[in-house]
Image (cartoon, rainbow, N blue to C red; front, top):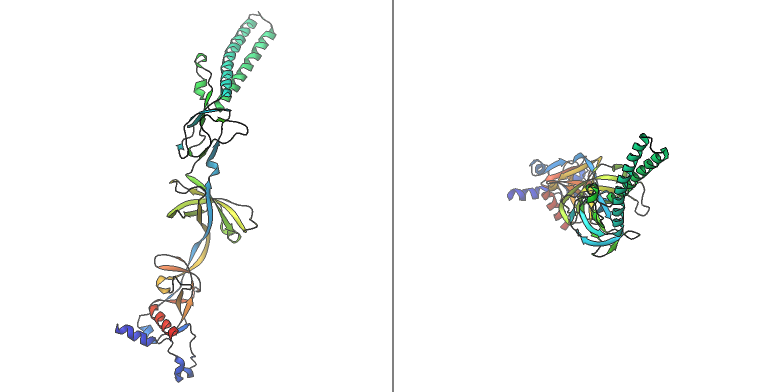
Length: 384
């Protein structure tokens, strides 16, 4: 306690040196209100420690805001290729479905007609094949005219074409190929077809009810299936930051709903035009969302870790005073025993250091230990 009293008495930072005529004679004028002075004894006592501002290169991080949305390359709108009536619903919003899984069953007269045409095409092909083989045998025995052989060959080719066309039609409607390859007597006319999911994902929208007639023109989307494990985030980048932004760079994304979570992503696309109103360029970020925490339409903040570097000045947290006020400050060491209360602007911080974005240079020195003595003296002078 005594040492503190001695120190407080010894510093007398602004005990006006101008009162001492010897000091005036030496040309040391009155210090400015922002300056303080410490005695040589106090400086030599080890109670006050002065350090050079730390300067180190760091990667530049560009921060911006954006909005999450569906990855359009992992999104599917499902509609009915035929007019029909919904007879069964097997997937509802929120369900996870696999590619090929049945979403709904639709009864369609058009499918019945397509199925009937296929069965007829199978039968016609068998008949045309037999006729062609018989014509070839008769021609070999010189028992028929050449034109009859040609006509049998043409009918056989036409039958194969019709079968291929009707088969492809049914395959496009989701009828399994194994069902179409069964023996002819095992085939039957079917009028119901399965509306299946084209991709694996989550059902995010459903627009049909039991008994509804679907497949009209224009065809509405009956289901929307989206893979939500990866989302797109659209963000705005100011013109001045464009030289730092490149496709493939890493991005960290945060959402207000999950303040402790950091979602990893990368830049997929940098826009080619500037918005004339905001003077920004759109960038698209692809973000990992395997835990499904991010939701489409959420507002997020993005930190783009660029390849550019900048010199960052840092000082110990103990050197900074006035945090939480309008203007934090440090005590910068000037010549000899003179110190200055220097307003600073704070940046990012670590455990025991804080970045200074304005107010100091790499050549400045600041008080890191014992600055409380300078603060006390400054407060005393301000109140005297």
